[in-house]
Image 1: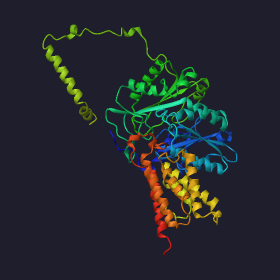
Image 2: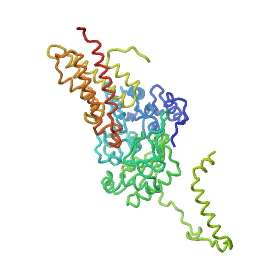
Image 3: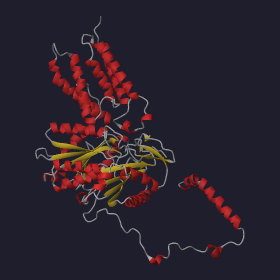
Length: 573
């Protein structure tokens, strides 16, 4: 049942207060209040040893991911964005500048879950950090198998399997491996991991409510961590049948992991992640089913991890991760670590209990039954008694719901500056849109600086704005993987660019602006018939997308406003 009830003080302060509560209960952590980040308290001594600084982060609402993985043998720091929104680049840069000694030439690896907003925002961070002299690289991880074979331009979504990446990277960093070696290992191991998810309920987001609607007898297979629609909607069935469907996606005959598991002697580790609202009771049953069914498939479950690793508030569901392993990987996973979400001693690996059931002859034969007729069998009213029991059972079943209910009785002065627009978008928009527009205006700023001095007889203002749009398009494509035709804001921008390329430079500016605006509008309208290859819409059933892309429409709206401004400032006849 959907609810908008949440125990918070305010939306505006909730992210920081969540982090403050986390570190208040963990003496090895500290929070950086001005950038919503959590760091190891011993980061100074850690960096003095020359070890690689590991940073990750993402939108809030997925706790204990990402801050819950900060600690020895794991991440050095993590930055939190707003609810389901990527952290703005400025906050991550503040984290880096606080904990990294640039003069000591500490290397930095940013581990990013594969979502468009995260790629864009952390891509901006990497670019800016490199400009400031930091030695930094980025590893983008995605392991979702729900859409395997569907040809998604943006690749596989990053789900709870990133927990294993954090653990392996942390073990290698603690060992003293350099940036190149750690990233190389992650690139080798990432294809060995796959995750599939199911949900019994929608995700309930503070101030927004349900992310989607499920009937009481339905479950969603293959959905994302923000409540994005999955690959299939199934009828509610038993835990056994649900695990069977998930296992088939992970390790079935046509599964992505089938070959890599076979090459590692059919050895796997399994991570069962509670997406937020599943009871421990149900999680235990799923764990039992997973172990039994994987073993029935002749797979050796070497390690099993259960709990909440990457959640979606109170969404009741589970994700199942499998990773093909060898002895080297197991040794890295077994290394000691200490964080609020993943703590283990070196001598207590999470192995499967091979003797789970106590066999004891004193318990008596399993099929023993009592002779009830001999003990208290009625000699009268037998049929009446049986009918009364039948009717009572039917009445109780039909009244189950009712019985359960009874029982549980800044404002800045605007400057003519693309760079300022970039920073305003980064600060005030947030999420994927903020990152895209920040990149757009950052690229525009660079193009202006590079080309404005070329204005002359052979290079006019139309050429300049054409190159500004061209630079913006190329930069967004570089970090988002989107291109014209993928059903995004780029379709409007590209249409505007093509209008500038083909325009007659002798036509008055306000007429050219109108032509560009009309072209951008047509570009936006054309997205209604396109297949979404990027963004969250790429994971939604195509048949349900019948209207133009909102991002493309937004671009056409502000380009039309630019045309109106040109018209207002046109010279009087």
